[in-house]
View: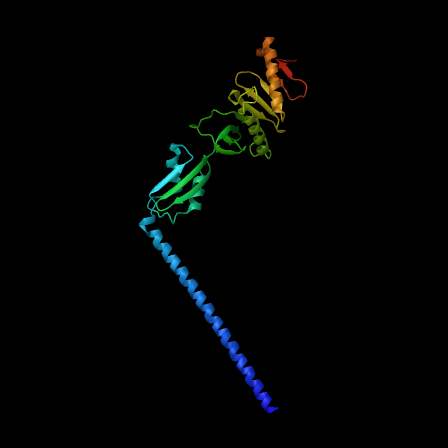
Length: 268
């Protein structure tokens, strides 16, 4: 019994020694892995710093595409890029954010071409109308206001009136107007967008238009614009044939089967 107890104790001791040895070997492996990763990270950091400061990757060419020549220099200026920078260390996200803050820029894409060139492709905002709110704003093809109208800006666009500054439904109303303008631009209606002067939007989103060559307003409502514009053409032909076009004060086409024409104080 005594001999067996001694043997058992020796067996337990040897097992513990093996376990300690395995734990120690495992710790050594972990240390070596961590040491290797640290060395690799240091090597990569040192290599990056060296490459970033090397004249081999110095920025020499900035190519701007997608915008007019008059805007290219301005975009480079507001980006803060200098040709003394390394192409590796350029802050692409920061440059993109700065350029996209320009009111005439919708989006920007950057691409590095090693070793010396940075490509900047910018997409212009394209106004389709001007909205009267607290002041005049350009409206893009998505029905969004994106820039105040300045004195030196071109203003040869239809003007959208009737909106309240900060109105909750302004976005919906602007999108409806833009859809109407798209219809006129398509050439599928007798009225072209070049003939349009103003679009008035009431609180219900109903459109009333003013055409440059006519001294009267035309009420179109909220929908079915193609049919209503065809009706407008027929009404105008009839009024011309009866020599009463110059007496018209307004035409209401927001009906399914008729048009209401107001002459001065009378309605026909």
